[in-house]
Amino acid sequence: MGNMTAIDIATSGVSMEQQIEWHLQGNHYPPVPKVMVQPCIDAIDAYWEDDLDRKIDLPIDGLDRDGNPFQIKWRGESWAPAREIIINHHLDAWCTEDEEYEDED
Image 1 (spheres, rainbow, N blue to C red):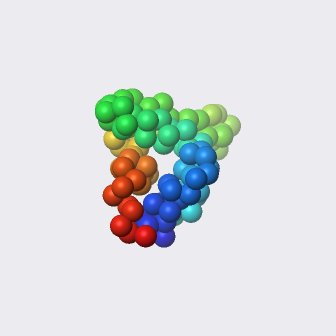
Image 2: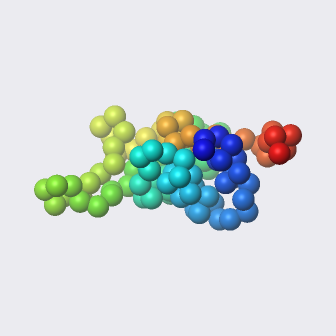
């Protein structure tokens, strides 16, 4: 598992949503909630638009033990910079030109 698996997933040809879901569920322990797929895609888009400081809204994931909506947070905020989402979710396979991985096959 890890970076090589992420590279294989990123070059699999399936939809970006499916790629990120597989990566978050299979390359992380514990698995990252599926609701983080879209924020990860938004962070990747920000990377390619050269805007790593872009604030990405974090989702609500179900209810907490008191029955209130459970807001995913980063450092107490309901958003995170694209850079932090990329780093913490190991999204570098989606933030690199494909040519860099051609020699690794």
